Every structure is written in structure tokens, then in C-alpha cells.
Image (cartoon, rainbow, N blue to C red; front, side, top):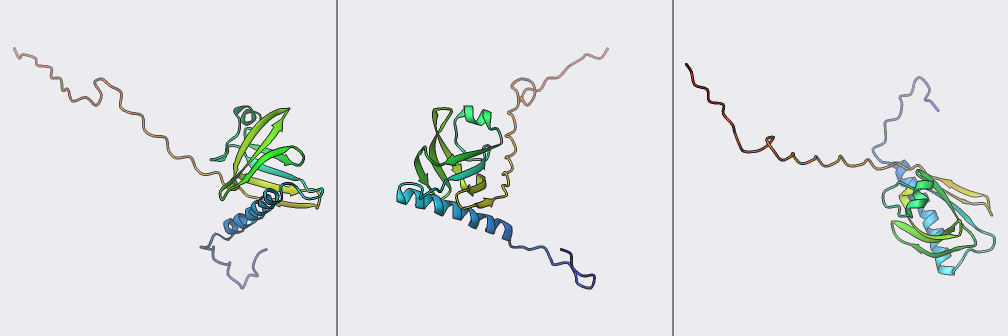
Amino acid sequence: MSNPPDQPEPPDSLIPYDEIVQDCLRGVVKRVLEDVVATGGLPGGHHFFIAFRTRYPGVDMPRHLLERYPEDMTIVLQHRFWDLAVHDDHFEVGLTFNQVPAKLSVPWAALTGFVDPAVNFALQFAVSMPEAPDPEPEPEPAGDEGSNVVSFDFKRKK
């Protein structure tokens, strides 16, 4: 939506409203999972599809799953899950993938989506991947470079 020609564009906000709203909406997912833990299971026909970035810092999952889902993954919490634990910065859950049990740990900030199809409820999240720190510089190789030995070539004048 653009402003009429006689009104200036609003200034850029110095308050990160989008990030604040995203964090609050992730809090909805956290609260729902806390309720599942507190009651010992999913109520009625509720079940959840939870999508996340697999390479987000802090995601912990078996290597074979990371190789199969190198960027994004959606898990389903419905009939067979265990050890659901909700923490301030992440959740953990045990699931079965092709009859192989696995434990996942997912930071809230890695979530890209949450759907409860039983009641047609869905949330989508923007995920900003943190920038990787610059790699540490490699140490100087041993030898002539960087050593304290100075060589002189003395030639006799004739």
C-alpha cells in the first residue's frame, strides 16, 4: 500500500516489530506443546505438523536424517512420539522414521511452520539464518616465512 502523493513515506522503524511478532507466535507453539506435556497427550483429534530448518544452529538430529533433509523438515506429532520436553529456547521429541527411533532437539527460532489440521489452524514463520562467523585464520606455516632467522648473502667485491 503506497501513500498518497501529498504524504511522505513513513520512516523505517527502529523497533523490530516483525521479529517481536514472530517470537510471540512461536510462543503459541511453545504453549501448545507445554499443554501436551502437562496433560500427557494430544486432546481429541488434534495433531501437529511442525516444520523447521534442519541446519539452524542448535538443531540436533541424527546424521542420516540431516542428509535426507539438508534444509527443511516437517515432523508429525500424532500417534507415535515420546519424551516430548519443552524448554525456554527449544523442544525435544522422540519420533520414528522408517521404523528407526530418533531424538530431535529443535530451537524455537528454527521453526518455519506449525499446523493443526484438525481445526484448520496454521502459523508460518520467517527464519533468518544467523551469519556464520568468519573462519579463524590459519596459523603461519613453519619454515622461512615468519621465522626470526635472517639470511645475508655476503659477496666479496673484487
